[in-house]
Image (cartoon, rainbow, N blue to C red; front, side, top):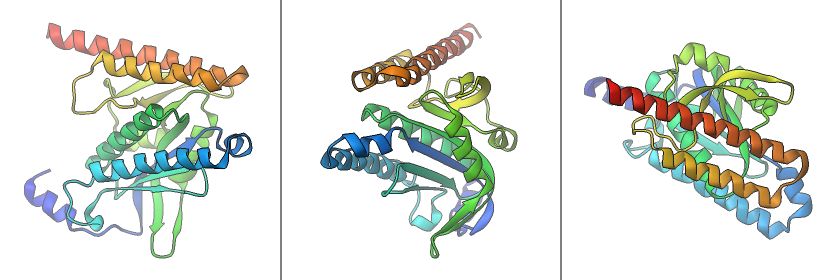
Length: 250
């Protein structure tokens, strides 16, 4: 994107209805937390989530002078357990920022010990902030896909794969994702691995430690999510190291 086109892009207001990318992240076990954890502890956890959301918005809006110019919008339903991220449009720059922001958010949630899963999808979406009206097929697709997941992570819906031309590298990897019924290959967004930075095995190792820590408050069938997530991160590490080796041999 040239300097001239970037300046023009930045001053173009958001359209209420247009094709855009949508991310949906669910905080797992929230309803059970309400019934078995003291109210103040749940409130403290939600403040951590809110802080993570605000930090993403600040990082990905640093080059913009006003909210109207930002190409990523992150909203959190404070009365529920969901975080939604929307792009301005279907531009590749918007998609890159969505991938970066949802990767950063996921890593932050793992750091705070908050289990979660999510998905991104693409399609026609209405965002009427003045009337608080938000609906569209990509939000439905992202929600339904994350509901199927049986591991902690972020996956890419087929609509985003096709329309976004998402490439596979150490930050976006293809994986045979465990689902509530069987498994299926999807591209996934790796938590905390930047699109622009070189892969570091230590980053994934730290993620593994954060996931293992979930065992303290988990037992029974829920530990399957932990095991499945660790298997996923093992694959991420293998892919990242393979890419580094190929680059060294070029």
